[in-house]
Image (tube, rainbow, N blue to C red):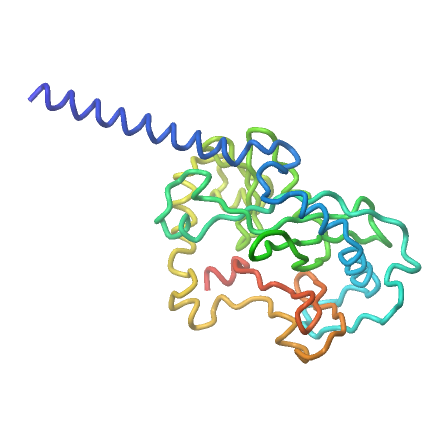
Length: 285
């Protein structure tokens, strides 16, 4: 009997050590990038080429040429046609892109292990301007192109996403829980808040384990994932796309209003991507 108990203890200890090794290995794979995050971004040179391209710069200029729609209006505003969209605007450059990481559906559902490579995924690359232009800064969002490379997904008002995403350092990861607009830092298996929304998301704690954080998000969202009754009834609907508010055959650039304005081009060049994850009031409805 004693030998059996000893064997069980040894096996439990072995599994515990294995879990720690897996967690450390997974974290190392995601955190080798250092402050810039370049090593963790697939085809980073293509991302640099995209964000520095004339097309992206012109898209930013188009966005900045129209005042942000006030209030929550989703009515698109047409961008004036100009031979040179950047004419009359102060000089600016677009910073190198950084990774915008989000929690995964499997992590929320509880089917993924609480380790970095299964809990967090790269969703977009984000860049902001080196200086404010006429009092405004923007976020350039790049989406992964099927088959490799990156393309412009949206231009959004504000630079908070880039600011928080850029807080990743050697040995840490930064990720977002967009339902709460919460940003967290992950070090090994410890999750710490980076903003007030994240503090609220951790029930006021200064840090929790990744395993305990998984329990929190599972309780909040597991029954609201894509395909759930909550989703099929449309209760999680959020920002619409430009296609929902403009003629799809048009090629006129538009500024779409809402909680944060974004540039869209009906017909496919610039598309306002619907956020997969919503405000907290939606997730608790």
